[in-house]
Image (cartoon, rainbow, N blue to C red):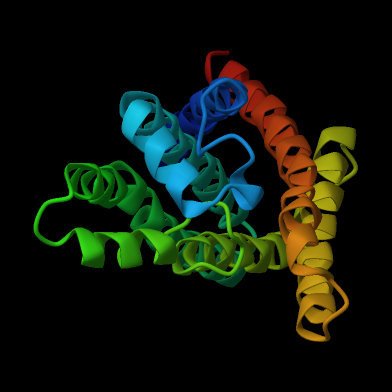
Length: 240
């Protein structure tokens, strides 16, 4: 019993610091560039030139995204640990979908810090393989919602939305913070599925995909902040 309580406190502490890291990296995301200015509207030549001139900033921006993704996933996994005390099956399912989302997110983000800079280097040098590099860079456009690159990112967020639907209702308790956490993540899960249906039915234009889906991120931030408060309370209880 004592070991289980000590583990819960350690998990809460990990969850709290993961929230802090996520908030810091989210703020940094507003300052670090992830693509050429204009993104969606920029042509291929403009993107190659910008990536060649801003290689270090591009890599730094996406490295920050990797840290943000891992910290956010850690927040969710710590939440499933708390959930396991009363809803074991839901906790395991939630953790499973978070783990799948990490795999989906790691692929494009590793491509951003490894493959894309190398492709741009080959294109800029006009060396052997530059034609293939141009073709691959078009497929790995980080701003086009229909590129191979962004497909993995949206897959990761969809897996987050499945986690959201699994954990939303068990989080409902009388405490206001738990209710905020539950409602925000539940709304995220339902809204994401609804937007997917609208997209598949052709009611969301390609140019509106980013604003429509990424706009839901505010609900994730509310959920994370509420969990951070809960984690902090548990770590304080562990010290008493």
